Amino acid sequence: MTMRRALELIAVIIAGSMLAMMLMRVSTAQNMALDTGQPVFGDFIAFWSAGRAALDGHADQVHDRALIFSYHKLAAPDVRFVAPWNSPPTFLLPMAAFALLPYPTAAILFLVLTGALYLYAARKLLPDARALIFAMTLPAAFFQIGTVQTGLLIAGVSALALYWLDRKPLRAGALIGVLAIKPHLALLWPLLLALSGRWRAFAAAAVSTLAFALLAGAVFGFDSYVRFLDNLSASQDLIAGQRITTPAYASLYANLLDMGAAPALATALHALSAGAAVLIAAWLFTDSRNIVIPGLAKREPGIQGPPLRQLRLDSGLGLRPPRNDEKTALQGATLCAATLLVSPYLFFYDFTLLAVGAALLGAPRDRFELVAAIFAWSAALSLTLGYFAPIPLCPLSAWLVLIAAMRRAGSAALRPAPAPQP
Image (cartoon, rainbow, N blue to C red):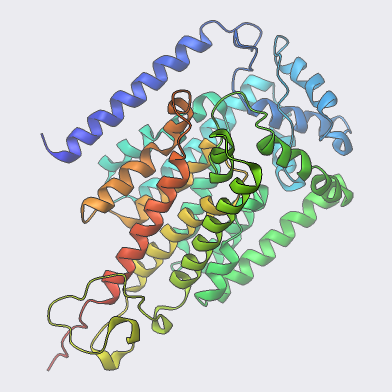
């Protein structure tokens, strides 16, 4: 049995086990609530409740937990937990449209549409249709059958934007504006577009984001953004106070708190990790003609010259930068991995985005890249493994993908330039 077939078999077995577990849990549900008191379709109850409240004229109260819980009861009478609304008005806008439908119908439609987008985007990035096995069994994606969160949507939009970035920059930029629904997962996009000189995509992204924000403000009132900002302290407390009963947290900060670290230490270590990730991302985002090689990669046989730290990627050294498509893939993988190392407000489903980064790197070229790909695929298993040991699996996986992109960039930069043709 080949390595690929063995990995495919393991992925299918794990996904099958997850599906069986979810079916067992939902089989005991009554009145759209599990026997634990959690709602069927998980976090989507927060989306639907906020949307329904907005439709009923209560957009100014969507951050009020008592009001939101009253709408939970309309959707799932036996629910015993409140799922607060912590998102900006830009996300409330589409959720109000979904809330026109009954709760179960809206949840299934949202899952089908975002799942279709995710698989469509995955097929664009993956080398063959067979590789969709890994996309379809990805734990971060598969868990969303139960929790119905935004991971599939964010991953699908990000993947398509990266796929179109150099092919259709205006379309890619317009699509980036959709990420305004989760702004903490779009923080590095302006850095990528500016440092790489993709100004058409930058302009399109700025216009689409502004238009989206203005539309949401016009519908719900621009003071809705003030209320969203005021509610950020509650979002912070959700992490700092470890308010969620399952090991769903995925940031280094939250994982360290779960391991018993002091808040000051967890904050410092997360900031150090995030700062390093941003610096690496900025280096890899920069136009490759201006990159100074940091000495990470080994010199290939036949390349002579000064020490690697002094080399610049210009044609006079007989070196060549990565091809445009390869460079974009490396920058995209860097974007996905570094994004998931910056924000302290992350959950297991957000790591669907890391699979996009791994897909952009393509087939593993050595043992390290194989390990990085396996960790990227399995990152969201932290939701299960966390019951046994609070290990920072998600941030570790993101760092492995980021380092893999660094190594790939270094080796690509050191390939000899093609010999001139007579």
